[in-house]
Length: 358
Image (cartoon, rainbow, N blue to C red; front, side, top):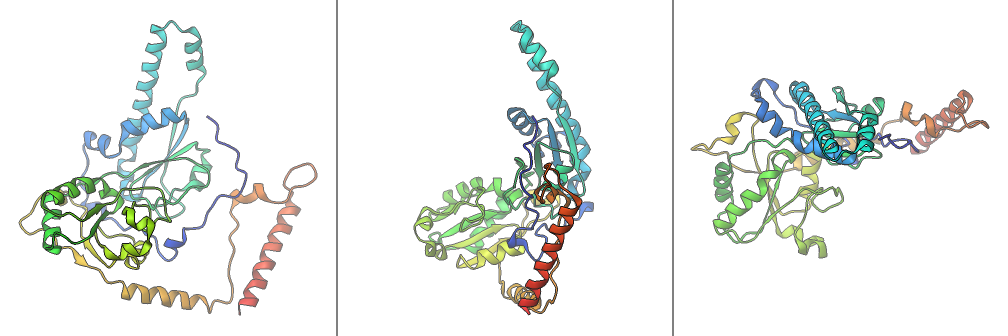
């Protein structure tokens, strides 16, 4: 299935909520245990990925891994390849059983799936790298790991959040120690790799007598009061209702997201997680959820913004994928003169803007 022609320059800027830092937290690869083949198959959701790719009839698939997951990339590549082969064999058997000559001919002419591993991404690992995917003419991107869920400009995306282990016993003990009043209004939220644990945690809290717990679900809506998460029904009617809730967040959120959340809920408690296998094992002394303060971060953000007002020159980067949008000559092709003129106008405009800002 051929990708649609690019009609305009892709969105290459980092989302404004991540303007000052890469929100992807560093991971110490040396502390990560090597996964078995069964764990790789389940963690990277190979079966679901194969099913969605086949349903979408995509043939050129870009696999985007964060740096600490590249060690598993070859095995995921091989498992996906075998998965596509099994699907084709199954389709062949079905066509033979139906004696469908036309179907057999169509299957022979149907190109096989091609997989590409994107190892050097253009932005933070949380963002879908459409630029690198363009270089291999991909039809779809499979994004692994944590994601900021920023909307893409052109390519469809299959998100695989790669669920991480978590001891619900430890989380439950920490929650009960933090919120002793079972009538408090609390929102349950987690970093993307831990979000699948939220429903089970909410059920156990309900069994413990907590009646005002709202468990969030992941949605693709950055403009939501809780970015990319569902909110209580009364919040849709009045944004101020969100201030009545406290937030219990599993794992450290990105700094920009933390700043956003701190302005919308009454308080935030963060349950710390680790990247080691012990995080899924109950312990006698579970980690404590810590009350978070964003005062120092806000001061740093203000200092950065203040420093920008003293910048005399602003640079404009024109990427190579933007050439199709440049002025064209009479025969419909982009000319070097047109490119030079367009670049000159952009530079001149930027210079004037800089002088006016001073």
